[in-house]
Length: 192
Image (tube, rainbow, N blue to C red; front, side):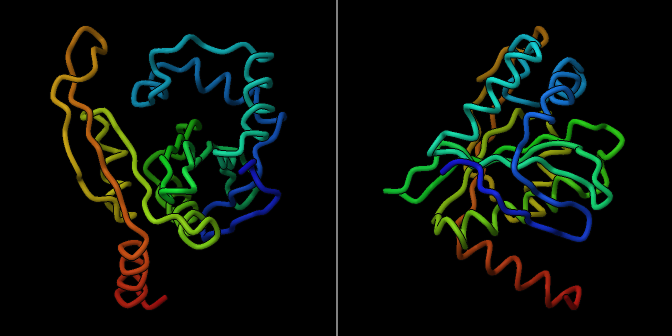
């Protein structure tokens, strides 16, 4: 399920196919400890530009992954959102998002990108379930995921050793019918 050549447009962001031109920004973001502090890749080394371009090439070819770059409406690349580990038999995938440009934190860009990606996953890919894992201190991510409709499914106590402390890992998930219901409630509440 390689990254498709489509664009998904919201009120704040546009999702587009990830590009080799994005690699330099990804390297810069992945070198920022504040950005990677809440990512699964946070324990990895900073990629070289060549390694990041190779990763993008590979990601675009993978059958079980869809990754989009997130741009603002005026064309500023600010992050990425993905569905990976796509399992057609069980119709499930894992979700990930990163707003690497900190100027756009706490502005709803990640939340809107998430809604667009979940819509794509449930409608276009016909997924039944989308899930994620996050480190317990990622309060910004937790709020965003709850706004999209993810529900708490479990907590793995002291699962991750990070910055000299043990941290819990939180599991969340959403089913297709829950996403549709959440979207309908949003339309009723806000008149959209």
